[in-house]
Image 1 (cartoon, rainbow, N blue to C red):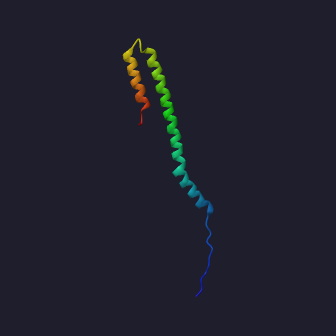
Image 2 (cartoon, rainbow, N blue to C red):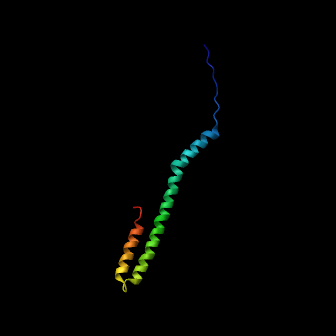
Image 3 (cartoon, rainbow, N blue to C red):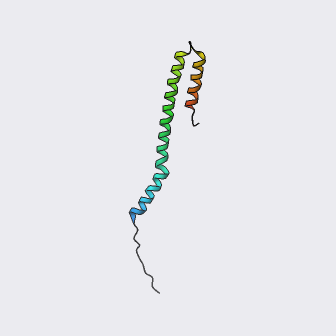
Length: 81
């Protein structure tokens, strides 16, 4: 009885490329999405603060309109929550 020993050749670039693609899909994209989400939250907060500043500027002359602006700013800031 004899046993043959063979050495297999593995294509490193294909294996590492598949692994790299899997890791990118698992870890790369979520980090990108998180940073995009953080940027969106900051932008909405800035826009809401600008609307609140407008509301403060008209509050004495038009309290009803200022109230509507405050409510709109709160809704805008809380989108997608």
